[in-house]
Length: 250
Image 1 (cartoon, one colour):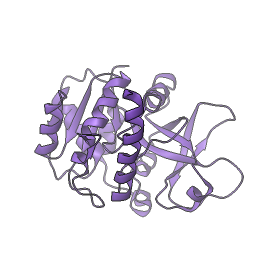
Image 2 (image 1 turned 30 degrees about the vertical axis):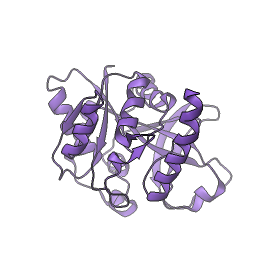
Image 3 (image 1 turned 90 degrees about the horizontal axis):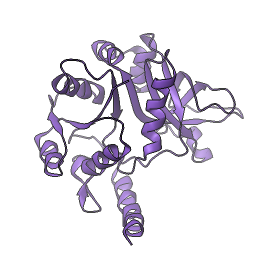
């Protein structure tokens, strides 16, 4: 397995425009994400950017960034475009797709994703889940839940469905973490297909993969990383960095 980590990012986020360049601990968020991905050590890392400003910020920090068509419909499409430019010969058979709004993503998240692909030959796409943070997660439509075939004590299992709806019962509720590991042919097939009915209904693109017959498996992580989607999330990220980065350097 020869993975390449790609971080899609664009300025036109609906709830927090310009968020890739929002400063956290003195650096643009996209640079924070890039630094953590590099530190994880799962292959080379590049940013698939929809805007020249993002490319400039990453390159100024010493990173690799590719400018992609700003009109591409999703992060997966952006990653595929960057993959084709960076690796036209097909040397990388796996793409780890890390969202550009996880400034504190830890190595165990990316490792859990990559390990599933390494260990499960039937897996076309790997992703990550973590236990619900609170009972409120069960009814929150902004929290995406993964329904898994996961034996007790197992570290990963096959995904049966993803939903924003409320899940009932006493079984654990798994919170989906938006990190994906694609086998290269699965990424090509996924991006070539139009949005599916379930994807449109739930507003979850991973359902397109399931409708295509692609197999998704999810690794279990200890905790979901903070994701920055709103101004409140950004304030929380800055507060977290102010405390924890100070401790780390003290």
